[in-house]
Length: 450
Image 1: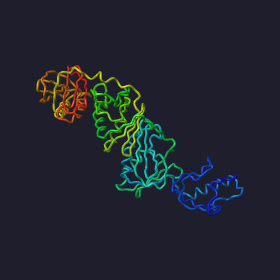
Image 2: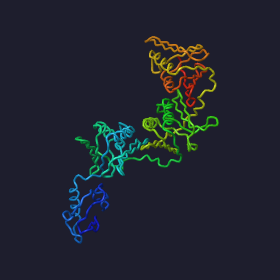
Image 3: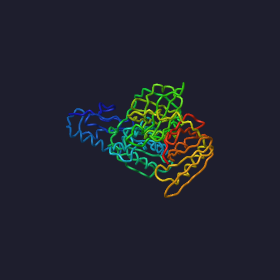
Image 4: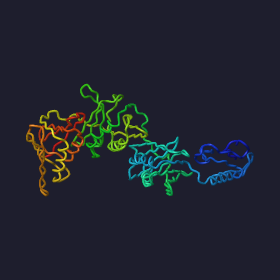
């Protein structure tokens, strides 16, 4: 039996110059009976390795022995090799590794997929619900792919000296990746690329774009009201849908935990008319918001019934959507609140923070007493004592109502103008809060008994 694994070599019966790409996979696959495509740039005379002639009848054992001689000759051969700037690698790893859970029962989910080709290193992480992919420029000596522990690799690169050139190289077995910088060398265990799961999300029937600043505002004005109760999973995210405000088509974002509600709207982007109402999960919202800190341009958004994709710069983030029905939030927005008071939001927030210091319990309840042009905030504790503070306000109503201090400060911190408008009904009914200079955001807060 004769294996013609090289084919008729040019320039003689045995000598062939292997001067193709300087990158590669294993020399020979016994299962497939062929060479894989990537081999080091080197000229080899196979006469010293192969104990048979082109027309000879060497047995299989001799052929296998010859193959291993070739493999041993290429000690140090790699399947992937690249050099990359430490700052660029660290920045991208910081983005993708945050999607990886610290404790994983599935080993491959603790790894980052590294794919080097075409002058770039692409990094991908996933937890099966969220996937982040980012590409960064690199000098690729040998194209290839592997997976390595995400947090460990990030920690190693973080501790490398500023200005370092990082070399990543995967050995011929594919089981070990060497990380080098200066005199430091690390060897990380790798897992097969084929085991790394893909989230998909390539087919997005609805596509539109919006400025990064507007998407940041949409998230910031609503995310604090998301629920953290796993039993009400349909509230664990931001609900985004196309709506209308009079004759104006709007993109509306809503979040609620049952105690408070935040709604923000903006003009509907071109192409978003057909979008379904979707709930973006809490983790995806948090990861997206961190990525947006470094985004200055337009964000491309793709939507399907089950997934959402955000693409900008060299980053693509894909997430599954919450599989649930968001409640009819319009029903909890009161329409008959006739008592109106306006107060400076910064002074209001500071007074709430000071007075609530004396409060007991998680709610840190504060009482608000309105008496014409004066608002009195107070808190009492059987163990600690009491506190009061007066503020000047614009209003003419008299009433008392209690609120969770933290919830109230979460809302006032979103008001950037000079006026905070509160529309109240009575001590047992929800209150509407708005920025007097920005009607795009609306907040609803349930009262407490104090």
